[in-house]
Every structure is written in C-alpha cells, then in structure tokens.
Length: 582
Image (cartoon, rainbow, N blue to C red; front, side):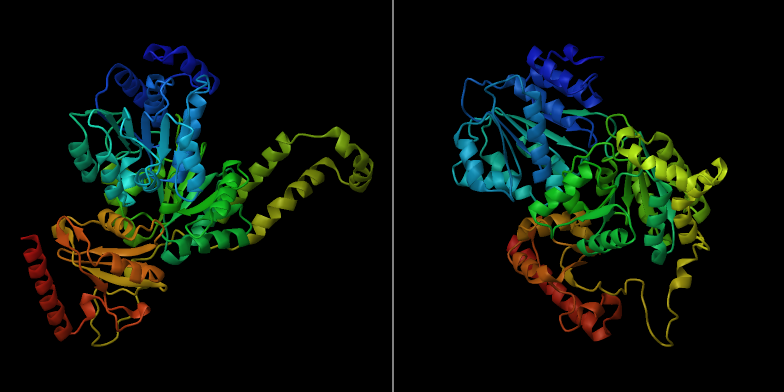
C-alpha cells in the first residue's frame, strides 16, 4: 500500500498526518487500520517499539469518536507517564482538524485535582497509566462504563511492572460490548491469559515475527574483562563521535556511578533514574531530546515509555536478566526505517546469556574488537576536519578580529597552519591514549578467581551480596513457574512501588533468592505476608538475618545442620500452603 488514502481515513485525518510528514503507512498501520475502521472486533497487535502502533489504533479511534456526545468513548492504558504524555500529544496532533474532540492524559506524579478538573470539562478519549486511572475510577471522577474502545498499549511492559491487578480491576468496570485492542512487542504467557479472559475471539495481527527485533538494527558485542567494562564504554563513545544513544545499567547505583564518571571524564552525558524528581527528570529529558546530551545513562524502569527519535546506539552496559527486556531496549533505535546499533559489553561469563538472547530474537550478534587508541585518534581527527569543513562563518561577527589573527599567524605557511590547528584537539586524544593497553586480551575467567584456601569448600553459587542490597529468600521456584520477570512483577504488584532496585536473581527448582535495595527490605517482607502466586501462599524472609548484607550465606555454605533445618522448615511451609489451597 502506497498511501494513507487507501486505508479509508477521512479528509481531516489525512490532512493532519500529511502535515506531520506521514507518507506511507507502516506494516502494522497497513494491517490494523482497515480492520478497526470496518469492524468492532477485538484485536491483538504484535509489533516492535517505534513501528507506528499509536497511529495504528489512534487514527481509527479518532475517526469513530462522536464529538457531539460529551462522554468518554475511548480509553488508552500505557505503562508510564512518559508514554502516556507522548500518546496524548500524538492524538492531539492527529485530531487537530477536529475542533470539539478532547483528549486528556491522567498519570501519577502530577496534580490529580488538575486532571479531575480536565475530566469534568468533558473528554472523549482518556490516556492514562493503570494506577492513576483506577484511582480516578474509584473516586467516581472517571466514568468508563459507556466506552466503546479500550486499548492496552505496551501490554507486556505493564505486566512486567506489576500492573496485572490494576488492569483486571479496570477492565472489569468496562461494558461487555466494548472493543478491546491489545498491542505488545512480545507475547508472554500473561498476555495470552488477559486475551483469553477479557477478549472475544480476538484477531491476531503481527507485523513481523513474535519476539524479534527490527531488521534494520545491527546487534554487536564486545568482550572484555569485568574490570575493563567502563574503559571499553569510553572507547566505544570515542570511536563514534556522532553517537546519540542510551546506556542501560541494571541498578540506580550503577547508573549514577557511570553517569558521574562520564561527566567527570568530559563526556556529554547525564543520568535518568528513580531518585530524580519529576522536574529534574523533565530537565534531563529536555536536554536529551534537543541533543544537548549525547549519552543518557538509565535503568530499564526509568527509561520505560521514552520516545526519542534518531537514536544511533543502544548500549547494554549489562545484558538484562530477562530476554524480553533486550527486545524493548534494542527497539528504541532503528525506528521509522532508519538503521541503528544495539551493542553489549560482555564478560566471558555472560556468553550463555548472549546465546539465549540470540536464540530468542533469531539473530546472531557480531563480535567486534574494542577499538585501539590509534583507531580512536584517527576517527576523532577526521571528525575534526569534517567539522572545520562544514562550519558556518559569520562574517559580520568575526571581521573585527581578522586583522589581528592574520598578523599573529602570518609567519606560518599553509601546511604548518593546518597541522597546528588540527593538533589543538588531536593532541588531547594522542596524549590520553598513548600506551593504552589492548582491552581485547581477555583471559580465561578461571584465572581471575582468587586462589582457594586449603580445606575451604566453595561453590559457584557462593556469592557476595552487593553492598546496599539485601538478599531475600522466597518459597517459589521454576517448579511453580516463577521466572525473573514474574518475580519483579510480584514485587511491583504487592509493594505498589515502581522504582525498587533489584540485583541478582537466582531461580532454583523449589525456591529462589533475589537481591533488593536494602531500604525496601521491610516493605517487601510486609507486602508478601498475605500474598500469593498461582494460588500458592508466598513465604519470604531474609536469606540469613544474622549475617551482614555483605556476607550473606547461600545454601552452598550453610552447615549440614543449617541445611537440614531449612529443608525441614521448607517442607512445613509447603504443607501449610497445600492445606490453605485445599
């Protein structure tokens, strides 16, 4: 299909999107828009981030809205306030020729009174985060009992953030006759359950294969020793002078550390994490969107819902624990037909995680060597020459100084002048990388281990808990279908906290261990007291309350007596849980 006119959109919408630069519909738009315009059938749309899903469901929703009726006719639920704001902005742009159509955004972190005031004026389409939307429904300030359409956008993200109960509560208050549209980049089991429970014979439309990344994104990795990870990051930034990307870290603490180091080393970077106020967050994002920042260091939680165009790189400082998360990360580059790079900095012990991601996305990663100092100097030199060649000259501003400049430099011939001018910037890199070591000399990980002490028993599961984190035990494991994603969802769901830093997760067969920010330790233990997972009562406790955080024991270094006692207690808890279920 060559144009939007063939999709049966009306003149008002065609005019608006033409002004926005829309030329040819994307695959998901081409497949979804005609179906939504011609029927009220439920639909599941699978497509990667940045493929035009908002227009796919937004344009038909606008066209089918009756502006003569002052009541909410459609609701769109999204996982984060950033995405909520972006969708609202897009819908208002699409509907600019509809004078009476009102779109209202409702989300946490902003005045609920202001949002209530907007709703009371009458709104046709509400775009909201699940938590704030449910709050407004309970307060009887948002009436969705007569809506025609409900959209779950980035549904997999909402579930991974623990919004399952909120979504269930919202969907249960909507009319049976509504049309339900579910859009997602991946198709985990929970999505299928929601589809089965709240949708009627939905049509599944997929723009590409499930759980794969965009074809125009190149996947590469660098392999270094763990202690050289940050040095490798700097070299990657230096060898790509025009880099504009997001660096993903696992925890808030790591995000702050990496951003601070980059800033101190002179890089144009800043951090985005859960400790920032909304004003600080808006300031950082404003600078990043306007490209006053080249590098944004962020956690997955903080970056959810960010919609930034023209990213050249996604950098995985660490591979995520869940493969689905990698798909969302890499989907932030290579949008709208442009090419992008998703690169990962790995240690040898992480190769198994890389293979798992490759298997899921059906793509092989290319291994590259960390650039040498010589390569970086060459790249920076040609960047400088290109900048000089393309710089614009303001004759009126520079003219008063030229006589003095000419006189100062008249003793230099052309060749010497060029050499000196270029060397002003080039010498900095030459000096910095003089004698720089080769980061590609990766040793066998066994050589990095400390020598074992005689008669000391060690096990590969024996690990130190990261400082500032608590190690918790939970009576769920792979046998109860627990995985890292569902564990994070449980924490978010029962604590109602969205910014808890989660460290290592170890899923065993019948139980698991996970690390969390110590300041949330009591909150999580309290929240899990009356909680359940798949009808199994949850039992959570500190892995070893008597020991310090830094020296938490694991099952491998408990004494025989301690291990026997733990197994005995675990058996009792299983029996209690079974009685409760019975």
